[in-house]
Amino acid sequence: MSQAATEPGASGPTHAPMGGATALSIGGADLLRFATAGSVDDGKSTLIGRLLYDSKAIFEDQLAAVEATSASRGDEYTNLALLTDGLRAEREQGITIDVAYRYFATPRRKFIIADTPGHIQYTRNMVTGASTANLALILVDARKGLVEQSRRHAFLCSLLRVPHMVLCINKMDLVDWSEEVYEEIHQEFTAFATKLDIPDLTVIPVSALHGDNVVSRSEHMPWYDGPSLLHHLENVHTASDRNLVDVRFPVQHVIRPQQSRGLDYRGYAGQVSSGVLKPGDEVMVLPSGFTTRIAGIDHNGHEVDEAYPPMSVSVRLADELDVSRGDMICRPHNQPHVTQDVEAMICWMDEQRPLYPRAKYTVKHTTRTVRAMVKGLQYRLDVNTLHRDEDAARLELNEIGRVTLRTTQPLLCDEYRRNRTTGGFILIDEATNRTVAAGIILS
Image 1 (cartoon, helix red, strand yellow):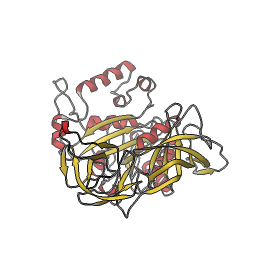
Image 2 (cartoon, rainbow, N blue to C red):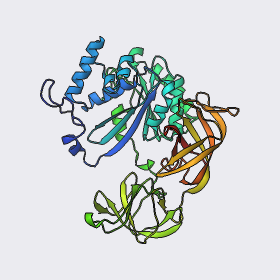
Image 3 (tube, helix red, strand yellow):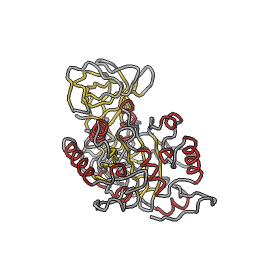
Image 4 (cartoon, rainbow, N blue to C red):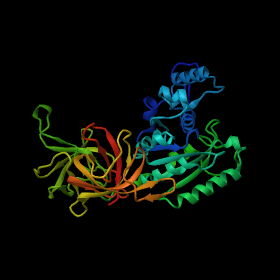
C-alpha cells in the first residue's frame, strides 16, 4: 500500500481520498463491505477513524475539522472517532446513533464501512448495516471482556449470514498489552461462537487509539503472530461467498424500444442476485413459467459475454414474452420457491406500534411488492440467551421473533441461508408507508 502523502500544511489532501489518482491505481480491485458492531464505548468509531487516518484515506480539511472539534471539546488528542460520528447529537454525546457509512480504498481493494450503533435501542440500525455486509467486525473492550451487546451483535451477524467475522479486542494498551487477557477473551468468544453459525472467525488484538495492529503490526504485542486488521481486510477471501449456482434475476425495469434513442429491442433491467447469465442460456420467466433463451446481455452500454452478482445489466430474450417488474428470470430446472406462505425471522423496527398476529402489511421482496397478513407469532427470541418465548403475544421495537406470513400473491423466494437477496424482505406499514420490520425467510 502506498504511503505517499503531502506534508501537513501543503495544498491538497494530507491523506489520499478515494477517487482521482487513487481510483485509477486500484484498477479492477474488488469491493468489501464490512460492518462494525459492539457495545457502547468499545471504540468502534475510533477504530474506523484510525483505519481511515493510517491508510491515508481522509482529506486535509477533514483532519483539520476533527482537530478543531477535538480542541473545542477539551480533548488532549485528535479524536478520530469524530470522522464517523457525523451527527451533532453523536458528537455531543460521544456515541454513534445512526449507521455511518464511509468509503476508502487501498491498491488491493475498495471498502465500504458501516459503523453501526452499540446501544440496544438502535439494534434496528445495526441490522440495517450488517444486512449487506461481507464481513462483521465485532469490538470488545479488553478491560470488560464479552458483554451482553457483544453476544447480541455476534448472534445478529450470524442470523444475517454475514460470512466472515473479526473479533477485535480493543484497548489492549489499557491492560498492559496482556497476552493472558487476549487469550481469555479469545477462548470465551470462541466457545460462544460454536453455538452460532460463523464459518470464518479471526481474532485480532488492537489499540485503536494508538494504531497498534490496525494498519501496521504492533511492537507492543510480540506474542501475537497474526495479521494487522487492514492486512486481513485486504486479503480475506470473498469470491466463494457469492452464489454462482442458482440463477436469480429479478426484473426491475422493462426497457421498451425507443427509436428516438436508437433502442430497437426490448430489454429487462435489474441486478443479478445470484448465478451466472450468458447469451444462449435457456431460462424460465416466473411466475408465468414460459421458457426462452438469452439473446444478449448489456452492461454500461456495452454487450457482455456473461453477467454475475452483483452486476446491474439489461437482458434481451430471444422470444417476445410478457415480462414485467417483479418477475424473475431463472433456470428451468433450478427455480426459486413460488409460495404464498412464508416462515420468517423478523426484527421489529417500529417504535410507535408493536407487531400483533392478524396484522396486515406490505411485503417488499426483491423487486416484487405484495400485501400480506401475519398469520401467527410462533415465538419471540431472546438474543442474549437464545431462549424462545413461545407465549409472546407481540413484538416490540428491536425485538426478534419467528412469524408466519400469508401473501396475496406468490413470492419468488429462496431460503435466506442459500440466497441473502431472494431470502430477505421488509415489511411496510400500509397507512404510514414506514418500514416496520426486516425479515429473513427460513422456509
